[in-house]
Image (cartoon, rainbow, N blue to C red):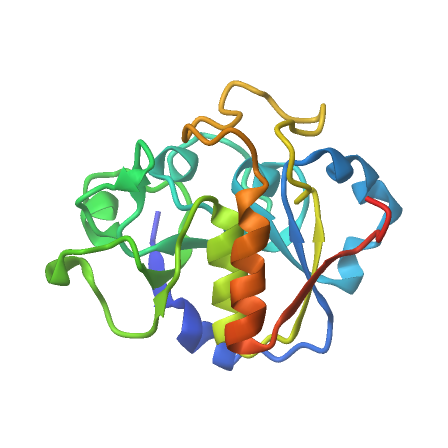
Length: 203
């Protein structure tokens, strides 16, 4: 397998599309995904959602998602240059992991995570605020890239997944709920002027 690693912000500058952006998570409102024509959106799927729906980008912070032998339905996998292991920076770059045979997808877009502390594990480009959940990282990625409107589905708060997903990893990072992501979204809006809203207002 021939791997291609590219900077996310370099890629998105050259990506021309008038489609709105939709970020899909595992929350209960994911049940309504069939009501949407996904071809009408630039879809970003969080974690295992990228194995369930066709998407432009599949985002995962944690290495265990990268290395699953699953059917990736994304065109690009998006990852910190230093992926996390057990919810902490893992101490290895994507190149290190690739050389050790630890990548299962061959087209990866990378960025610097604010959780990375070692200079040796930083690469060129902006540093993206990563807090609490992958949804926060994705909103900041898109906001830094200049996206001013982001729709969501399956990003609901609370403490449950859609019945479509395995609950073994539910809140495995020790948080009591997904509610904290919304205060982070407010920070994103304040800093970058990006509006983040559910695609279905009653979800």
